Image 1: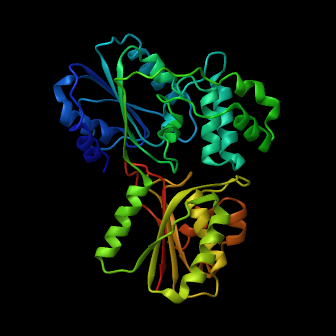
Image 2 (image 1 turned 135 degrees about the horizontal axis):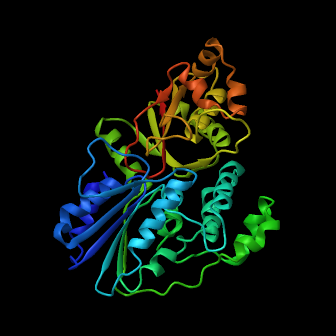
Length: 390
């Protein structure tokens, strides 16, 4: 859980005399709570920007709701308030910046000269393009007023300690929420290749103008990654082993188009079938190229694609879910499928092939009770896939 991870990290950090806590992301509330438990009286302000409110909200936090996965007025308004509240910091101040997944759209406003509508429209284009998360996170900072180290520069001359709960596969923490307080690592040539790949070259000037200047490093700063997908997968593997199960890790990250990832996992399941009983555990973050107007997300689309590929097989089951408890525009965290799933969806009166093409995986899986529901978890370290061979 995010709170204990924050407490564990902060016990090893020297407590400052004066601190302002800025917590951004899906795990922001729990992370800010963990900070309060350790530094207490040193914290003069605690501002939280997240995407949902729990029923037991701590009274000492200022909490603002933003938008996810596309920034809108709530995100812009809350982000500008954080910007204003950190505008007059001194060298004696310390900013404790608690960052988790979801911050790209929660903590956002356009760079000078760009409109909010333009920024929102580009987020929509990114999401529907099929671009990888790395590619999207390479471009978003170029339109942003807060990303790619801009927030860190804004907080000068204060010191900054960053505790990061990573939701990305990259080891560089910049990729979490597009690095509001870390230097931009992308070369101009890489930006141009991405723009060319998705037919956005006519907008090159718009993006290239947003390349930020180098960020000066403050020797007082600290950047600590307190959690990641790798740690989550290790925990899942350890739990399964303690249950006496035979477990293997899927060493390759589950990335790319969700439908193709579903096919790949089905091929893996068929190859490994003779080795059962066996549990294969993996994770990553796939993408969805939107062609329809259905409900669902990358995990449910992956599962439905898997179901199509294992028709006629037996003793195979796949569960895929987002650790944040939210998959796309549905209420589900993900879904699961076995060899009977495709046939059962057809029997319910829904055409699963059409559902796949219309990005309507949630409707298909909900019809037969094959969705995985957790409610928002207050954390986010990417997606997990568990493949069971009996």
